[in-house]
Structure formats: C-alpha cells, structure tokens
Image (cartoon, rainbow, N blue to C red; front, top):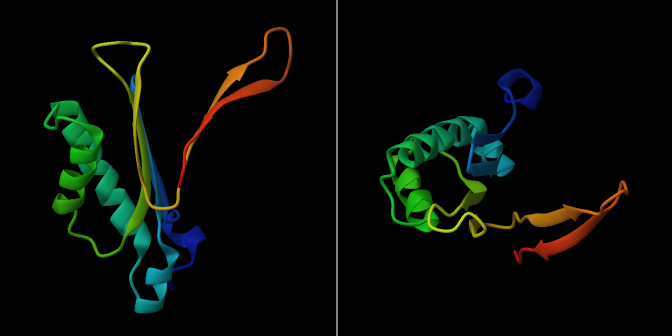
Amino acid sequence: MFEKRYKSGEDNFVAKSKFICVTDGVGGWVRKMVDPGLFTKEYVVHIAEMYDSGDYSNLKELLDNASKKTKAKGSSTCVMASLSSDSPTTLNTCNLGDSGYMLFRPIRESNKFDLLFKSKS
C-alpha cells in the first residue's frame, strides 16, 4: 500500500537561488499506516513559502515554524543552507536529525574535490 515507487518517495527538497533544503521522511511511520512522504511534501511547501516571505529571523526559526504549520502525520530529518544576505561569503546552515552535509571545492585542472567541511550529526 505504501510502496515508495507508487507515492513519489518519502523525501523532498526545495531549491532557490540562495537557499536549499532537503528532507528525509522517516520510513518507520509506514508500520502505523502513515505515509511519511505526505509529511515531507507539505513540510517543504511551508518552508518554501516562509522562506519567500522572509517571515523568519534564522533557519532554526524557519524549520520550527514550518513544522508547526505542517498538519500531515509523520516526521523527517532536515538539512537547510542559505547564503547570507549580509555577507555573500557566509553560509548559514541548520540540521535536524541524523542527516548532514559536506562542502567540497573542485581542485583546479582535475576531476577531484577537496573536502572543506563536514557537519556533525
């Protein structure tokens, strides 16, 4: 009934020019007959709307308030990153759960990358 291929998965994302958010729905909800994909889909809609409106002071607040607006049952990990409007060389991040992120820089004249940063989960 809740096979991932029939419901477009349990994960979701939103990407803007200076913002990205990735969610990973908790599959354990399936045992309770809850589709965790519905939660992540609604969650990122609220995140995107609040990001566009600027109705938050930091990414943690954006994460919290979008969660409060989400009515679907379920839960999710979440990783967000945005370039600061005050300083375009500053990356703000927020991480919920056991997801994480890594920052890489390409090595010139090579197909390799340097790992610059790895978040702690």
